[in-house]
Length: 87
Image (cartoon, rainbow, N blue to C red; front, side, top):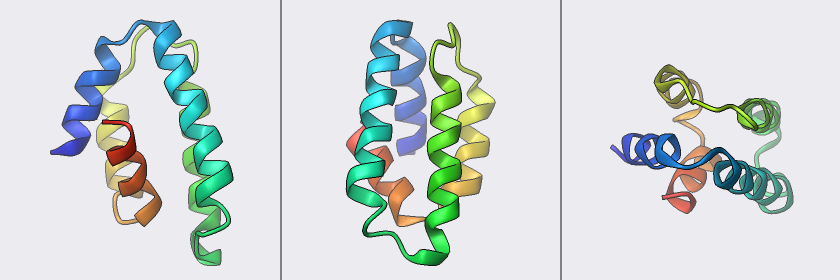
C-alpha cells in the first residue's frame, strides 16, 4: 500500500522537485544504508540506486516502474526504509 502512496506522490510532483527528492534519496542510500546493508544485498542496493538515477529528468514516470521495483526490491530492508522515508 505504501508503494501506491509513493507512486501517487511522485507522479504528481513537478520534475524539478522530483529530481531533488530522488537525488536526496540516492545520497541517503549511499551514505546511510550502504554501510549497514548485508554484503549479499549490496549489489541489489546499487542496482536500486541506478534505477532511481534513471528517473532523473523524466517528465513522466511509468506506473509500471513502481510495480516492477516493488516486486524486485520489496523484500529488502533498505527498500522498506526508502519507501517510508519518502512518503
